[in-house]
Length: 94
Image 1: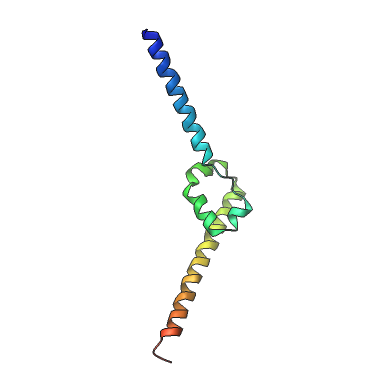
Image 2: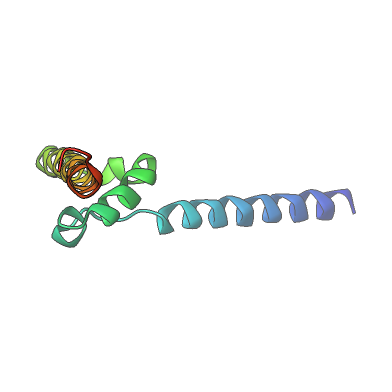
C-alpha cells in the first residue's frame, strides 16, 4: 500500500510538471513581421519576453529593439500632436 501511494504521488507530480512545461511553451510566440509592424503586438510580445527570449536570434532581437524604439517614437509623436492640437484650439493668443 505504501508503494502504491508513492507511485500515485510520483505520477501526479510528473503530470503537473508536464502541464507546467506545456503551459509555459504555449506562451512562447515567434517574432514575426506581423508583430514587428504592430505596436500593440510588440507590447504584448514584450510582456512575455521572459518566455520568448530563448527563441530570438541576434538579428531578431535587433528587429525587436528597433520596433520598440519606433513604437516609442510613434507614441511620443502622437502625444505631441495631441498637445499641439489642444494648444491651437484653446490658445488665448488667437
